[in-house]
Image (tube, rainbow, N blue to C red; front, top):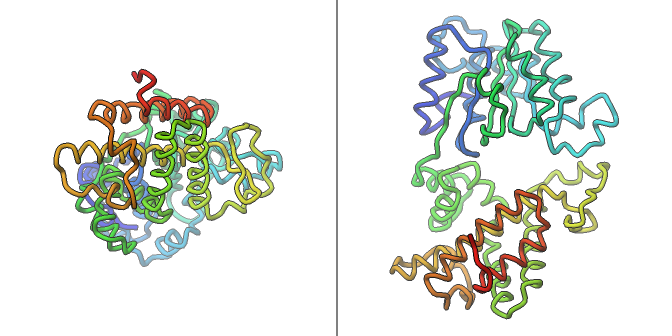
Length: 382
């Protein structure tokens, strides 16, 4: 947990280092930027430095890594370091809260795991550090409850809110935090790191780097769930569109998204005691219903691949050699191979519209069918 482990985020790290050197640390920070670019790693490095017991270090140096506090935080066992995340609902003393789905950081979690401990004296060091992962997942009630802690912070508490969607936080929350912006990473760096860490082939690593938009953490997760291996199934779905069967296309898209969702949640069995999802669009896999929010996120990945096929076909029209997606398909779907430039461009717009619909809780089956009709050119796309 060192600042030096955070790569290509010089602007963000310079803001943090300057604050450390000035010895006038803010009581709350908002680490904002795309998912998977090093925000939480930087937040943990800051927490380690604030809790480090080596007083001989330069103010902006990395934590020593050797003192008792550093060893405890490295083991995720420091009594003054609090990682706040949605899964904490399973540890809440109230049984009714433990039985919830944990889709949001609800007010009960914020009060029990953050507001109450923040008012206490540190157990071991000079301060308590609270790292709020996916801070945008706090609902409005939780954010309002947190406001008082941000307005009148206990002297020994430091809050670090980490978010990929700062716009979803209340303006009053944003204004009470020192904002630290993070950007995307160079594609070459992401591809090299992906190949080194996962053993991915160079062409696959490069394509995942481009597909992720320079987000290493995202590219690594997609490699782990074999996202590129889903391309063949996406091609089969597109063939169903060519056959004039939007319903079959939508069902196929949901099936492959369900498989992606299952591969992305290795701890799914831990949720066995939770109440089943009541929404009709949450399919069952291996006898267990896939949570609707996870299905929608997996569907977005499937849509991403549909869009990639359209994009790579467009690149082929311009003479760009061997796009990674189409080169992995045993047969390029006729819908993509034979489509005109205008049809492919409309297909990309249709994919964006489908993602918009999913974000607004439109039923996945309806989203898939509408996308199929749009891909056939039978529906105007805004």
